[in-house]
Image (cartoon, rainbow, N blue to C red; front, side, top):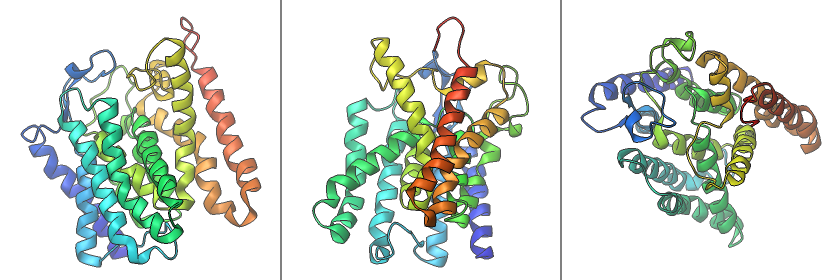
Amino acid sequence: MYTYALVATLAVVGFGALLLRYAAGLQLVDAPAAAPERKRQKQPIPIVGGSAILLSGLTLVALFGAPPFSLSSVAAPHSAWLGVGLLLAFGVGLIDDLFVGGLSAWQKVVGQLLASLPMAYVAFALHGALGIPVAIMMAITAMNLANTYDNADGALTSLAALALALTAPVVALGVAAFLPLNIGEWGLRRASNRKEPRAYLGDSGSHLLGMLVLLYPPAWGFFFVPALDLARVSILRIRAGRHIWSGDRWHLAHRLEERGLSPLAVLILLGGMAAPAVLAPSILGRFGIEAQILAGYLPSCALFFLAVRASRPKELGR
């Protein structure tokens, strides 16, 4: 296990450093000119996180064999199909990263639907025809929740690592190895005066992490706080007469940054409020869903809305 963890960590760092050198040539960069109203970086940032994590995973598979997905104790014969689903999820996000302006909402949903089909096949094999729509809906939801939370340096990366820490610690270490590039200088400067991150996850990375966490049921608390944030922002967008998939800076992470908090402080706050929901299924699973709700999801929900209230913009009342 220690060898596996060391290889996972070194592979992410190594592939990340290598991809940084060639990101511009591969057009794997997030340019602020693409959406100046919400992209605050001063220069293009390489989008190599998803590629680095994926290449690390492929290296581990080549050296040690198929990973022990815990989607089901009887899903082992279907690990190859689950792996194909991860590749397709990454591919949809990568296409979105490479297109100037990204894919349209409907194009992305169609791509996510295709990426969910391998998981739908596994669900059919395990649970029959009823498993197909459930698996498709869960996969599309997982990719979109992860994608919508990739709006602050290191937030999604750290949350995924935290969620996987108790159920898949080796995978968690590999994901966490990307953090130094993701939040640059560990985000110690204030949001208004700091160096840019050296790399972003990109949609390829967020799609990959969303699907990856979905394969480990005890880690599903990962999706709770992102779902709360997306629901809140969607309501605001509808009230403003906009599409719910519109881009803006209304997410909680953006509000905390606008309050002058450093990226590291934002990361710690987001991780702290999500921690009860993220860790409850693994720690309290044997006590039933009631214990998980009382000791996990309710505290995370309360902390989330407390942070929303404390960071409320005075002029807009959001």
